[in-house]
Image (cartoon, rainbow, N blue to C red; front, side, top):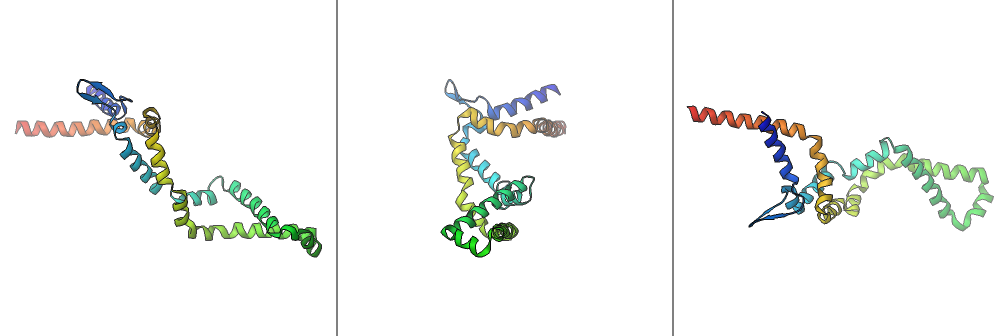
Length: 187
C-alpha cells in the first residue's frame, strides 16, 4: 500500500521534476508539463478564458459581485466627470440657467441612469470586449515566456490542491489494473 502511494507521489513529481532539463547520457530528463510548456500554456489559456475569465463572467462579477459597490462608485465618479467635460466651457451659462443645485442634481441623475442601464447594455459589448482584451493570447504568450520555475509555480498549486485525490485515484486505478492482471493470469 505504501509502495503504491510512493509510486503515485513519484508520478505526480514527474509532471514537474526536474525543473530544468537534465542530460543523462543520450537522454534528456525534464518534467512532463515543463517539456510541453508551449502546448500546456495554450490549453491552460483556452480553458481559463472559456470556463473562468470569459467576458460575461467578468462583467457579472463587476456588476453583482462583492466588489460591485466599488465598481458603481467608480462609474458614478467617471460619469460625473464625463458630464462636466461634456458641458465644458458652457458650465457658467448652464449653472446660470439651471442654478447650482439643479446642475449638481442633473449630474447625479445622469450618473444614476448610466448605472441603471449598464447591466442591460453590457451584453452587447461581450464580443468586442473579448477581442479587445485578447486575454487567451495574452495568457498563452506570457505563460510560454515564463522560466521553468515560474511556469511550475503557476500550475503546481492546482495539482497540490487535489494531490491527495490524485494519489487515491491513482491507487484505485492501480488496484483495478492489478486485479484484472491477477484474474487473467490465474484463469
